[in-house]
Length: 178
Ligand SMILES: Cc1cc2nc3c(=O)[nH]c(=O)nc-3n(C[C@H](O)[C@H](O)[C@H](O)COP(=O)(O)O)c2cc1C
Image (cartoon, rainbow, N blue to C red; front, side, top):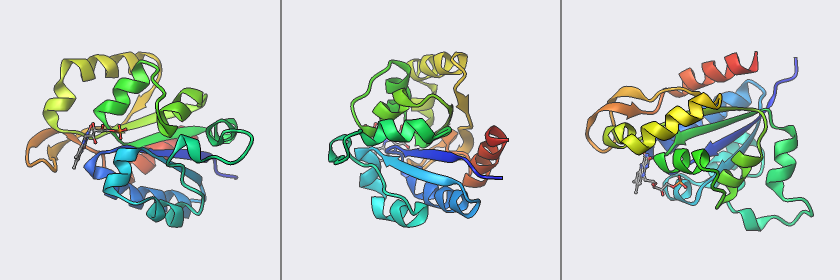
């Protein structure tokens, strides 16, 4: 059975380093993985890591394209699943309100397949009324979520905000792909 094309969107959460493992596991399962990184994500982990692990070019800037057709449009025609991990409060807000101001948010509005978000943030951010209202809107639109999990978060707190483990995200992708 041929595996699906996945767009793996990486936003500026400290859990971005764990997503290298997810990317590697996806390619080992023969998924065709296309990574798009936000500017903040690139402060935390390099595009080269994902170039090597995904074996595909990594989209980091909407304006780098040299092809006649913007890369995000071409990708949207073949990618069946969009996974955002880690997914910041910022991305959730932009996606909810249709904002497209970089390669990833622009791609997300172009994508017509399934969408899975793996939020990761400080528990106070996650519990913020604006974030929760945005999450409720996205769930009502059929957007899938995994996590966040409860436990230690990088800022030193404990609570709901940890990104789900890469193996759990992989399991959810496999279910969406079934
Ligand atoms: C070291 C560091 C870690 C961060 N971790 C998170 C995080 O886990 N979750 C989150 O929502 N924002 C986090 N932020 C804030 C985001 O990076 C910031 O809101 C940024 O604008 C997100 O942009 P993006 O959604 O385009 O990637 C962090 C910021 C810094 C400096």
